[in-house]
Amino acid sequence: MLERAEEFRLNNRAGEEVWFRELILCILTANSSFISAYKALNYLLDDILFLEEKQIAKRLKESGYRFYNLKAKYIAEIKKYYGYIKLKIKPIADYSQEEARDFLYNNINGLGLKESSHFLRNVGYFDLAIIDRHILKFLNEIGTTSLKIKKPKDYYLAESLLKSISSNLNIQVGLLDLYIFFKQTNTIVK
Image 1: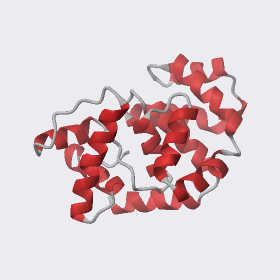
Image 2 (image 1 turned 45 degrees about the vertical axis):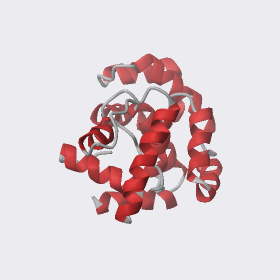
Image 3 (image 1 turned 120 degrees about the vertical axis):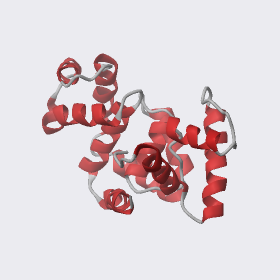
């Protein structure tokens, strides 16, 4: 698990290509499994910048990805930001990870709060939680909440509960959620 966290820290120092890849991966991961998203990403990566939306959709479909038309639209939209993603996001995230997440959530179609947090964690920021079904299950099991994420305020509430736990354990919340995911799935693929 710590090796995976170190990979994320290295991504923070990596170039635009890595940040762009992680952004696409997070768009693909929304409402899909990581394995499906990663497989789809590999169908695109070599020449993503040269593919039109319909070509992206075709490749996603060929990979077995479910939401190929919608995700192709989102990916085609973010291609215009290639070369500026790290340049724009890193200074905001270095100042405030919450502001960086809000920027992504409000400006990148296909990213909700969870995937915006996921992207930031994958590029080396660990002060936000990725509130997914595994984290909600954990919070329910320890009796903290029976919350379901229906609105942004639900997400923020679940995140604040997990942040409180992480603070008591003296661990960054982004590492705690990675650990919880590992304990519940016996895998580190996030």
